[in-house]
Image (tube, rainbow, N blue to C red; front, top):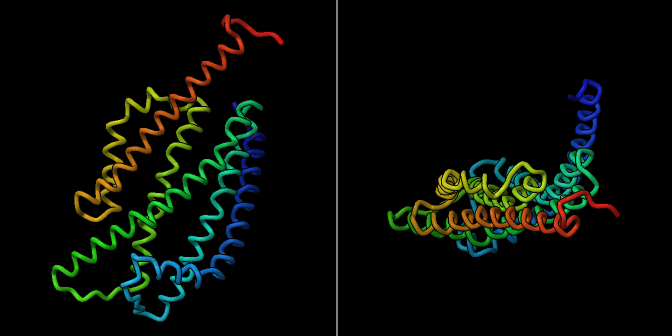
Amino acid sequence: MINSDEWVTHLTELRKRLIWVMLFFILTLAAGLYMSPKVLLYIKNRPAAADIAWNVFSLTDGMFIYMKCGFLVAVFFTVPLALYHVWAFVRPGLTNDEAKKTFWFVPMAFVLFSIGVAFSFYVAFPMMVSFLSKMNKTVGAVETYGMDRYFSLMFSVVFPLALAFEMPAVVLFLTRLGILGPSLLKKVRKYVYLALAVVGSMISPPDFVSHLSVTIPLILLFELSILVSRWYLHRKELDNLLIDPKGGESHV
C-alpha cells in the first residue's frame, strides 16, 4: 500500500510534468496565434469553404477565431509532449523491458492522431458541409454563415474523430500493461458498436450515407484494436517460448 510520502512524491512529479506541458502549450499557442492568418487562409481555400462567404456578426468574432485557430495549432503540437509525459509518469512502475516496449506509444499515438485530424478535416467535414449546404438550398434558404459558427462546427467534427483514431494505440498500451485483452474487447463489442454508432450520428450529417461514412471507420478502428491486442499477446507467448521452451526458469 502506498504511504503518504509516496503519494506526495507522485503528486509532486505529476505537478512538474503538468507544468512542463502547460508551458509548452502556452509557447505553441503563441506560435499558433502568429500562424493563424496563414492557417485560416488555407482553410478558407479548401473546397469545403471556397464557395462560402465568412461573415462576422460581432466585433469579437475575428478575435475568437484567431484564438480558436491558435488553440488548434497548440493542441496538435502539444499532444506528442503530453503523451511522452504520460509514459514517463508511469515509467517507474514498469520494468526496463516493459518501458522499452511501451515507449512506441508516444509516436504511434501521435501518428494516429494526425491521421484522425487529416481524415476528419479532408473527408468527414467537407462531406458534412456539402450535405448541410444542399439541405439549405432545397428549402430556398439564403446561405449566410458566420465565421464563429463555421469553426465551431469544424472543431466539433475534427477533435472527436481525431481522438477516436487513438483507439488502437490506447488498447495496445493497456494490453501491454495487462489491463485489457482481446477476450474482454470481444465481450463488450456490441456495446462499443452501439456507442460508436451514436458518436458517428452525432458528428455526421443526418443522412444514412454520412452516418456510415463516419461510423464504419470508427468500427474498423475498434476491430483493428482487437487484432492488435491479439497480435501482441500471441507474440508475447512466442517470445516466452523462445526464452524458456520448457516452461521452467531460464538461466543465462
